[in-house]
Length: 242
Ligand SMILES: [Zn+2]
Image 1: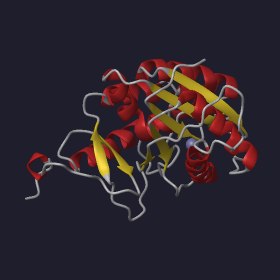
Image 2: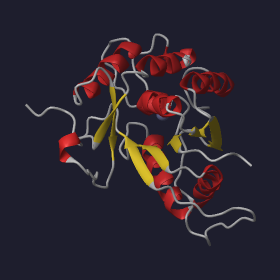
Image 3: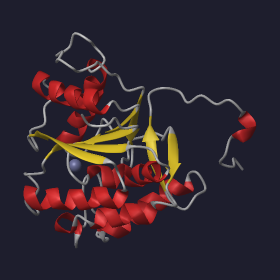
Image 4: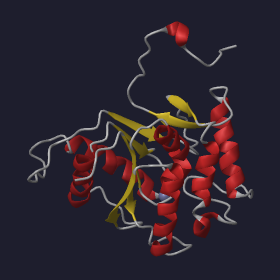
């Protein structure tokens, strides 16, 4: 029986979570929280590298981030579908890993797998809490408390609900991204990052610095939630207005 995790990041492809929320995952791990990654596919449709090579790279990246575990759902790359079989596969993982917080891709994306991973992940989070949905002996229902959407690199007119200060783990994020040499060395675009002609690593640095500037910090990662954020003490609010 796998030990539960506090935070689980779910994404379509190996390397997606490093790009969108790697700094946040490294920060949580550094704080002693149990962090898991669930990649939905094995990246077998990727233009560069093979699924085997990406598996080894993903393992190295997970070690670099300091996460507790990394699993793969083995769904079909570039053919991701929000169907019953896929939902049941994710429900199984959620009931095993029992995360309180789940990080999903933003529901709009360049790659159709990113959009579908978002919908599939959200639906599975709900269904995992239904006792009579795909019940299995020895398995308890579990519904994650909180869903966060990783908003990095999106240019939709959506303001982040909050930005996580990743200044202390930004270099760890970059080192984890650097583990995917087969994907990124010499690359000009990846995932949701549109090509500008600049080096990919430079683009990630610039974008992370931009999100950091929104909270007056060197580097940040943006997130969206449908729910409203509650505040106890208005005097404790950070980020100077004027
Ligand atoms: Zn992807």
